[in-house]
Length: 311
Image 1: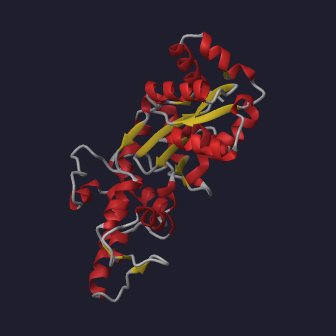
Image 2 (image 1 turned 135 degrees about the vertical axis):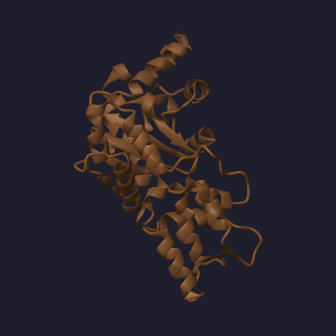
Image 3 (image 1 turned 90 degrees about the vertical axis):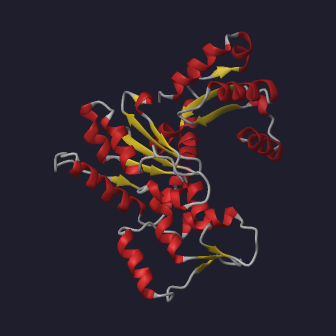
């Protein structure tokens, strides 16, 4: 629970919260109950002076100094494609989501793990996935090469553990983003007929946006989230998108430019930190503790959500 993490940090740092404002980066799909709980936690438990919100994707683009972009957030719980445009903010109605996530990659890799113990530390698998794993640019070619090597390719050993990763898992695990039917190979009910590939999800998100912005979005795709750190991810995604555009008879002049910046796994946090220094002096975009207690809670949430989408 994110509020428990906040409580731990506040207690550990011994912060006197009634003298501080708090800016919270929120997901674009945040439910009203979640926001109500945050406000209750901020004002009734910790008594912060005031609070404001900013959307996750808007914080990321603000950190990188980009005003119009398609933010592809590949997180542990799912993937989200969010169009952000100058003078519009986030097009909330055009956001696309699917369930393919870093967590499913961890599950996929764990099926190929060779280990002497019955317990698998998923934190180690997650760290391996983000630091050492790679995305195949030609999965059929890599599988053929793996088969022809006849066991000569040694498994990767996670340092200081007895965990060995089968090379085949490196080839196949990330393929679920581009061929979701690979989920059918996993034990459990992870595969669903309506799940589409990440490249198709991006195409549908751009196609739903105003036509005059579509080329800009294709030319400014930003990858964020831990999985975006995987080797070759942006190259493979570009290859798949170009294939879709060719199938849809898009103009050959349409550029696909996928931007992979440093610190992409925490870009939203860094953007929120950067934005808070500007926001601090704008008293109109904060809800104070007294305003929270004296006003209608639904109106306060609507006001905060409006500000979350405006820089």
